Every structure is written in C-alpha cells, then in structure tokens.
Image (cartoon, rainbow, N blue to C red; front, side):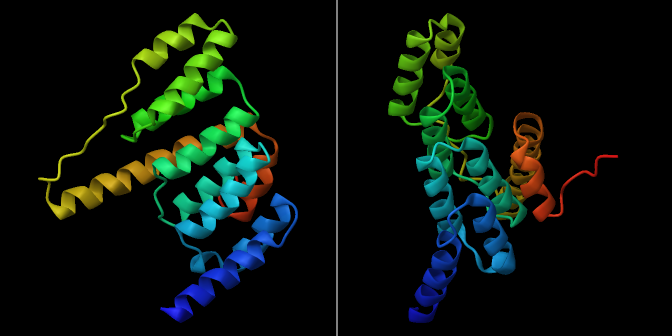
Amino acid sequence: MAETDHSFMKNLTAALAKPTFRETVAQMVLTLDEFGPGHFQAVAEREADRGEPMNVRSVHLMMLNNDISTNEQDYTILFRSYWKNGTAAHLVYLLKEMNLFGLNPTQSMIDIATEACKAAKDKDGEKVLKSITVNNTTSDSAELKTKLEQNAKIILRKTDLTREILETESPPGDFFLSLLGSHKQIA
C-alpha cells in the first residue's frame, strides 16, 4: 500500500507542479495510464478554483477516455467552476446534464442555481430547476453484465457530450483534444 501512495503522490505532485493547465496536461499525458480518479479530481479542483470550466471539462474528457466514469463529485467540481465563471444558464444546464446521466445534484446546488436565475431574472431557468431530480436511483437487481454494459454506454454518452461541448464552446479545447488523439483535423 505504501508504494501505491508514493506513486499516487509522485504523479500528482508532477502534474500540479506545472503552473498552467496546458503544461499540466502535457505532464499528465506522459503517464496518463497511471492516473486514477483522485489525480484527475485534484487537477479539476485547481481549475475550478481558477474559474476555468472548460479546463475542468477537459479533465473530464481525459477521465472518460481512460474509462473512468465521472460522478457526482466530478460534476460538483464543474458546478463550482461555472459558479465562479459562468452564467445562470450554465448552472441550470449542468444540473440537467447530471440528471441525464442519472447523477444526483445536491439541494445546495439547486438552491445556488435558483438564486442565480432569480438574480438574472431568468424565469425559464427557474422552471427548469423545478424539474431537476435529486433522488435518481438505480436498480441493484440487475445482473453484473447488464450493469457493466449500461455503465459503458453512459461513459460513451458522457464522452460524446463532453467532446461536443468542448468543440463548440471553447477554442482552448482544440489543444487538449489534440493531446488525447481525438481531435478532428480541420482542413
């Protein structure tokens, strides 16, 4: 166990030692297969603190490309980044996205988004927030094979959506997608 902790800290320290996100990603891709959810979440936390939601989404894409499914904690980090540097519509959309993938936003996330909508005088956003479910549950009675297949499909859907968002909302996304070998060449 001590070796695992040492390896974890070595990789995390190497990634977070880089001052810019671009340099961090360049460092991460050198040992990407050694990165686990904790590594990715630490980098995403730093970017959320900086108010960089597209960088957090880029980290999500890296996770998904490594077959690590994003969860409520990852979306909470993304929510914080949009809260710091986004709009009420971003917050509402993110909560809808969580519901789309069967994830549960917290009541405080809904309250924050509701307050943002009120401040922005966004009545439509407030209506949408009333339809957000905080209690998504999955059946534990399904067979393991079925659960694994469903999880694989969800990872693919999350990957596709994350790529689409990065491609349409953020010029910096091009650089990070090219590092991951999933970038479409523009003629």
